[in-house]
Image (cartoon, rainbow, N blue to C red):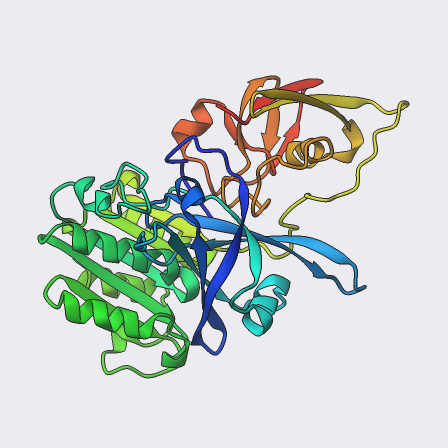
Length: 395
């Protein structure tokens, strides 16, 4: 996932939560609800559009238990119950070859427990600027500015954070308008089909829903086929109110999100109005992470000296210069609680500030330019380029 900044300085930490319900959305997707007990409510306050990382251990091909972490967007607005408890809901779509998503879709049941990270991410509307207490969801409306025109373009499971954002913005002000272009292969693949229809019934004059199906013929040609450059231009010219939009939300595969970003930029839309999130980088030929990569410094080796601050404590580790090890991988060898989720440069959980020394960052789909200018990096993608490097996770 791509995020642009953390909306709070809350420490990313895992907590054991019980699965309340597993609901089938499509043949390849489920919605999972977790119970958040009263004592953990503060750890799970969130804004619509944020995500949580799930952690568990599953057997690999050799039958050995291996820790897996996967990030999933929260698909519901904050909700609390009379007893003070609350819930977190995520949607998990089965990916081809995805060990975690395949297991969850086939075997995860109510009553089981998973490790769930406190919500992170900034694929959120700039019209909301405070985290929302799960026990006081009405604070979202109070934090909103007056009205606005919003457009989202989502594909597949990219609807997950978008539906939460749409619900929140539409409920926050009676002058809000929200257009959603949602791309799928067929009607059978549409996640949250009934919920989207209900939202349309609730706000018939303010919520416009445009289903684009690549493998089914729609009455309107512009809504049939894949969203390529030509189709996107048609949508922007006929369906979407380009000049009136206050904020854009793009969520889905790398190619679609990048196409939309480039097209909007070419049409003069300010980057500040465009919020985006990726579920993949679109580079399957490159490993997504070095997490868990075995590296053993030897006394005869030339080593980088990596120092890091986490939770007010300073740690240090040496990394062989020839290993080209990421800072995250090195830090995890001495502090297993160093925060990360995807370890692929797309979620921003491992963000830290370079205090001294220099690094090279391979990929960045999570940090905005102002953060880069201040010295922030993604430690999962950053390699030392100076003899000594110091980073701070607490800043």
